[in-house]
Length: 170
Image 1 (cartoon, one colour):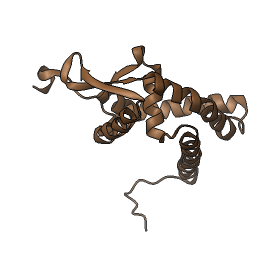
Image 2 (cartoon, rainbow, N blue to C red):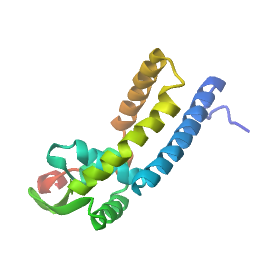
Image 3 (cartoon, rainbow, N blue to C red):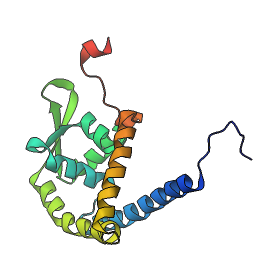
């Protein structure tokens, strides 16, 4: 039974929430299958490689990667280790902080991205873009962008930027 003091969602809000969760789960499941079949990658490994592939010089700090893909730092360390063993990334001490780690995509990592991207784009197009008229895709991008920005304003710990340097720690 719902207490009158408890906030609730009206049927439209609840329907939107459940539709978002279901669409997200269904889309991610199919994307993960495609990534595994085409490149032997998990979804988060693909996110890491794609983020590095778009980064200047193919490198990012480990903490920045974790913040960007909203993944725990320990989980990201494990995934980066798997990618390093596969020769898809390298890890090295950050040039500006000996405690930090910089991850860099290798040529082999770029090759895997090139192999998985066409199928990845195909899945996204078939399942998310094609069923909608262009104006709905534009509205979806606008709405989800607004929600994403709102969530990033109060991110979970795994997505919160970390303070850097001794002065920041006080």
